[in-house]
Image 1 (cartoon, rainbow, N blue to C red):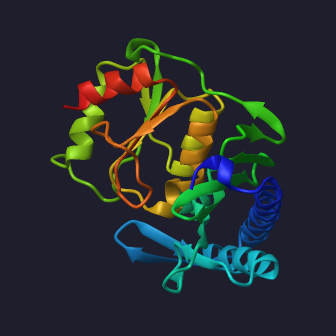
Image 2: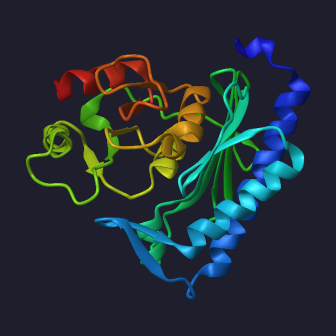
Length: 265
C-alpha cells in the first residue's frame, strides 16, 4: 500500500494509541528500577521482570483499542494469525543491559505494520521523558516538534554508532567492519540501544548507525523515524531495507550512506 492509501483518521488513531502504550511501558520500566532480578536468555543477552511487565502493559493498552490486531514482541510474543493485515512490533525494553546497570540509555519501541508497510513508529525514552514519533508520509517528531537528520555528507566529519553482536569475538565480520569505519569517521561509538540510536540519527544528533544482528522489534520504529526525518536507510550492502532482515545502515544523507557502503566492502 502507498502512504496516500491510508486514511488520515486511522493513522492518527494508531499513532495516539502507540504513544499512549509506549509511555505506559516506560512508566512500568521506571517503577521496576531497583527491584527486578536478571536472567540470561543466552550469553550476555539479559532479560528482567521489567521487560516482561512493560510488554504486558503495552499489549494490554493496544488490545483495548485494537482487539483484532496482531502482535510481535521480543519477549516470546508472536500473536499473528495467518492473513493478519495489521500487527504491532514491540520492544518493551531496548537496552536491557544498560537498564540493568542503571545506565540511562534505554527505551520502549513500538511500530505498526499494515499491509506489509511500517506506518507508525514510536520510541519513548523514560529517562529523558522524550517521545519520538513518525507516521508514514507525515514526517518525524520529538515531543511534538518536527525533527530532521543532520544533513552530514562526509565520513570524515561524521559521528556514527555501531551495533556489535553480544558476546562477539575479534574475527566477527561486525568487529572488522567497526575497525574499518573507525579509521575513516570522526568518531564511532557503541551505546546498547538500537532504537535510540535510530531516533538520534533522525533528530540529527548522530550522523549514522549500522548493525548486522538486530531483530524487527529493535529497528522497525526507528527505521521509519529516519526515513521520515529525511535520512537514508538500506542494508549494509546498499540494498532495500527490510525490518525482518538483520542488516541495517541508516545515515543522515544518501551520500554519507553510499560512502559507508563503500567503506564496508
